[in-house]
Length: 368
Ligand SMILES: [Fe+2]
Image (cartoon, rainbow, N blue to C red; front, side, top):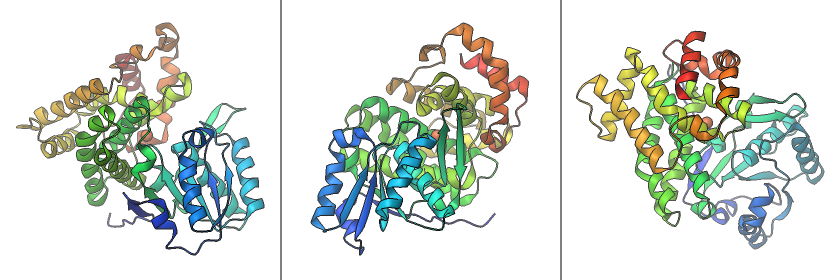
């Protein structure tokens, strides 16, 4: 496997205006949500656009789990305004909405490049080829994957993450860590994706708690921006594993935050996967790089699970599903169904250790 490319131009620690002034833009549309308007983050972009005398319009109706309806609304607005480029400002939902709009526009013959400005450090959506759309009628999430949706530019400006609430920092950061660890250990990992993943893991362990405890720490915000972006590049090229399969189920069934679900499950999955020789070896490599006790492969793999448990504690992430406030009876009843869906999840095929339906049931029991 020798093919690797990154499509997105990444500007980290660079102000928006500095990036925009290099381009000859006449019209821009900003895709975002109401919260970004309230927090004054849209104003920062508006100021830059006004300074550069670029005409703009704003679509601020992005939903938390973007539905087809809201994407259609955004699509219409973009079509009517016909901008040179789209600025997607926000967390995964805003960037995914912009990507889905791009996807549908492209199908009708028009391409408008995306400049993604993430306001969280987690999803990596600014560099990935995925967008998740929710069909509210059928109550299903539809993942769209298309290389063409990868944003043209990503601006990782710490100005946009300085007001992040603690819970969002924790959930986003642990999601990024899960991306990096699963990418490093999955079936399609290669030298390039592993290099990105490992650097991301080191960056997250160094900076996530710092940012969580003091969002005013600009350096920590810059480093987390880089790390989550690198984790995004890694998993977009390699895929993920069963940690994400299970998080998708918890998110879909119980409406739990995607990142938080990943964090709760991660130590359990590391322990489960450690019985596979090759996966354990890769956990050991990660532990060595982190400077954790790793005299033997076994010790290294164990150390990584413990390090994640300690990180979770520091981030006030629950240590099991029960602590997430999910009712035992309804959870246990759903285990057979959830095990089946988790097994069928697209991420499961990326897991190096092969997983049976029985394994999945056991894991779902254990994480409770
Ligand atoms: Fe994720």
